[in-house]
Image (cartoon, rainbow, N blue to C red; front, side, top):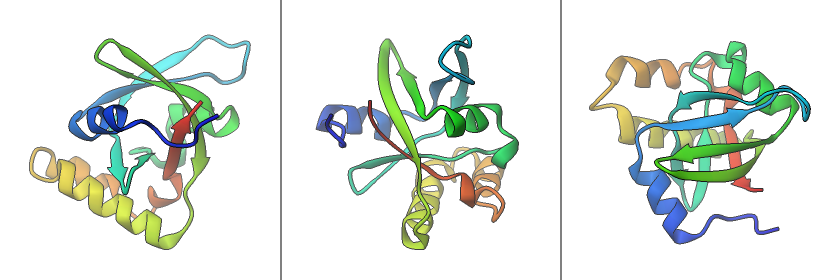
Length: 126
């Protein structure tokens, strides 16, 4: 399994403002999709829960880390892992500000609140 996305997928995710994330509570449960934001930092893909640990999609992908991103007509299978290094979390926050601050300042500030930082996830190809 490759642990990095190809250049075209990275470009698509970097240019897309909103994606749908597909998660499941477990392997037997129905899928759930919700709109989230995604950023690319140094060739890696990251997401974060606006609702912190209360977010349904975040709880589901934390317990069952395989999911997918839906971008336009594409389904991109992903594997989620916590991103815990302070420098990475800070870089992800900066990327959220850079990508979304102008169009959604209040939501962007909510996305970088201290309580949301622990929900930073790195997505890799599944």
